[in-house]
Length: 557
Ligand code: NOJ
Image: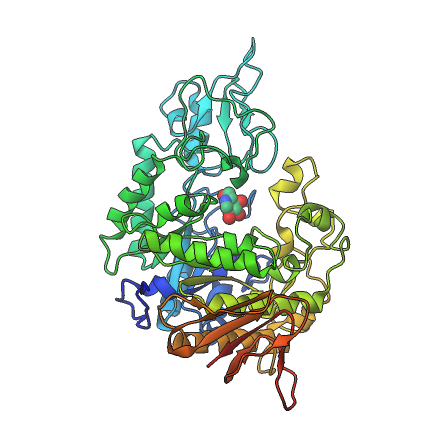
């Protein structure tokens, strides 16, 4: 059996700290608002870092806090090397990083290399300079098709709906794989490459420990003329790769993209300890692992666990495959259940397989109705299962509170560009981005002294940190206990699946005879013998053989 390096030494100098880390994702504008303007900010994050330290995570990943008009929640970056004035200053960032490090937390920042904001000085220069200019060469400008160039240069679709091309007043078109406010950069341009090396150095010099790389699989494009149509309506997300020979899609997961990450690795390795990175690449298994090779980024998010249905066989397959693909490139596996782009998992795990999540959101979360208590049970079971696995877990702010999706947001408050760009047909991702409840009462449940940029439902009070802190059995206390025990209990040896488990049950052993058993079935099953170290739901009292209830994970010694 292969052994993965297991890391208990998280000291600042340990180059391998990321291999078994738990990383907490902070979505800054929804985490905590220090200045009371309704938008979360960096001083808000700094003021709440003790929550992360008490939770027991190893690192925080900050989603973008750079200057941005927030056309796509900050992923439309106007300056990659500054802080949005509404969120703070560079001095605030330095104070945040210093306090995080003092508390023993690593800091990961988001890097958005595929596109800039349309308000970035480069794009403004490109618009002013006109067709054929050097300034336009940093982006992807093309003439249109049709007698007067009135048709887009290709049929490529934006991930947010509609054509991926937008026409400018002089008649040329520019490519935007996401919102029209996010023009794609041309990564064959040396100036683009050099600018991102500068950005990597800028944040590394300020002491950041790693980078999360946005849409890591889309940077290089086949722009050979004539551009290759994909056949409308072509899928625009990860499903675009299904059935295609690897490396042949015109803009996703092309082989050349790896040169960029090998180049970055040289920059990242010039620091001591080397800076780490994690690719956001919605690419299937073995291809995704290539981004995590030791001479590239180190890690790639594994979204297959997140996408798996609540089904023992499916999850077992995902775990086995994920460990194997990570091992094959010398990386450690990663696990994610929620982030700022998906329906929060207590809700998602209750949706019957095949549910159209958008239709569910449009129904305000009523069709189908979701059993909230059962969703929370499943979420807690999924978390304990995740935390018993080797590798890194990425935890999204609010999941330690068991927060469900805010599916009932009225459409007039929506800020996700998906809503407008799809002609108001896709409700988007705002329901997982509602500002966090810290207190059970108060203007914005303790988020800040003022309001919150998205309305918080009344039921947030029940999930507030204050309502759970110190309360035995609360989800917050479960996360705290699990994170503390995880370090002590589970070492780097890969899990061994236990034989003869009942249908619908996942059971594996790690070293020292510690076991993790999850009952995903609808009926109780016998609890295996041994000492129960932690259970995701309270176990029934009583003498005689105890059952393991449905939707429950236990850790056993
Ligand atoms: C992935 C990010 O997670 C998402 O929020 C964003 O909209 C797109 N990349 C575009 O940057």
